[in-house]
Image 1 (cartoon, rainbow, N blue to C red):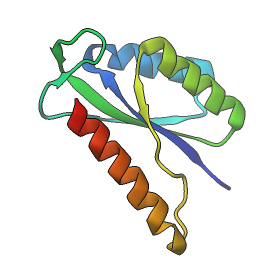
Image 2 (image 1 turned 45 degrees about the horizontal axis):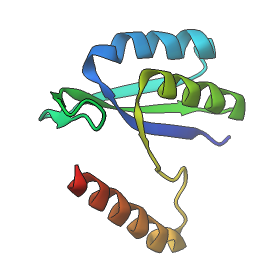
Image 3 (image 1 turned 120 degrees about the horizontal axis):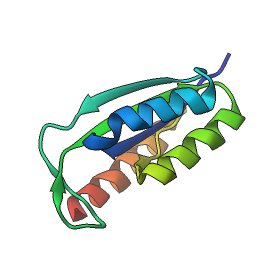
Length: 108
């Protein structure tokens, strides 16, 4: 059995609505976990510093993946690419992802 995941950042005020929408839309077939970000992050659209949370959503189906991606887009969540499974030879790909995300976060 293979699980997939979606990882991203969301405005803290939207957490409860986001979690409820995920649960209702997927009929409870996903697992969402949240963690607070310790410092305010400047929003790219509004330019204001806002409190954010990091989320990860686990699911098993491509249909649920489509639903989760649509919900993330509707809430304005910023998604980040994280590989589902890592094989021992994938360190180069992981290093590339870490480098791209680090440079993107440094620009913010």
